[in-house]
Length: 439
Image 1 (tube, rainbow, N blue to C red):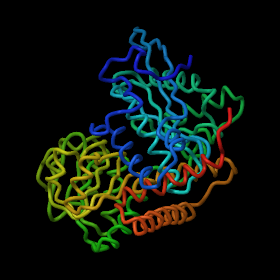
Image 2 (image 1 turned 180 degrees about the vertical axis):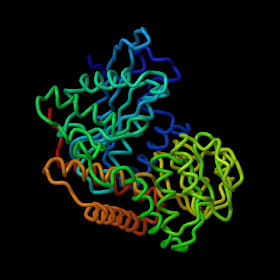
Image 3 (image 1 turned 180 degrees about the horizontal axis):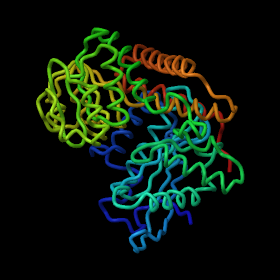
């Protein structure tokens, strides 16, 4: 059964939805997203009716997911899908599986996906969804049944022409395969393009696993050139060693950069002369974390890593990793956002006062969205692309987005973040106005 998401659906206060109009001085992902949107809307002079449409989600769906678990217990899990705006096309967005799921974060993520698709020239609107579950606390069979029940419950609102799923937190290619199979079973046809990030054996795309990292590496080269940093030998601190951070560390290390800092949930390592990235990633691949790694480098915690000297700091893990409490301690010449909203709005103002530029997430980490679009196109046409084609088209898309933002920055004399949001909001606003309002 589908019902609108509200603050009165039996959720505990700490995990419930935020009001539609949050206090923008709070350091939350939703407040960070809304602050950037409001700034862009003001600078663009959006008409009131356009502003009102863009600041709220088109649709917010909540579903109940009952499940008999393998341990003999029964539990009803909560599932959500936030569909922000479809002015540019069908919805596209991630699914995440976590016990700490928050509705306001899904709202922020859905809106970020809208702006990201717009700035990258991708004909999709943004969405985001999740299931409030701890995958580590249940069996693989339990998780599959819950995910399949979620997909079946969303059938009227998802699919290749409605809303396309992409991977996210604990929702890997295995989870994408379950969703695709569930949708296909109900539709009585193979719905390959209903999800992206699938296994290659199920019409996934080459280049998908490290697409975000590849996109970040392209933006880093462009930003380094723009801000006067060297093209090789740049000292980089990366927060996060998973799919994004780990792959980025591998790519940058192979490209001649010096990875001075790297962390995961177990802690951080720092070496001014550079870490042994192949050794660290091999250890993490074997053990699942870096807690027992004995390689060269000082052992730090994650907050300490954010304050260690480097040329480029790339937070690839969590929202608000750089916040008002640590922004003054950051010792980087440039920050590139690898995660969604890793720099809070207060921290952004502090960094601007310190003349530390920030390349925003809706531009920097867009490689995954581009590959999702590429996979969707390949599935729709039934023609798979070669590695070289995917790589060249990804580079072109990232360069085009960078150039559009830089042109807007020079035209309006604003930061990269404000320029990126102005480009994105303007494109979505134009699409919405062209569509008009119909009931």
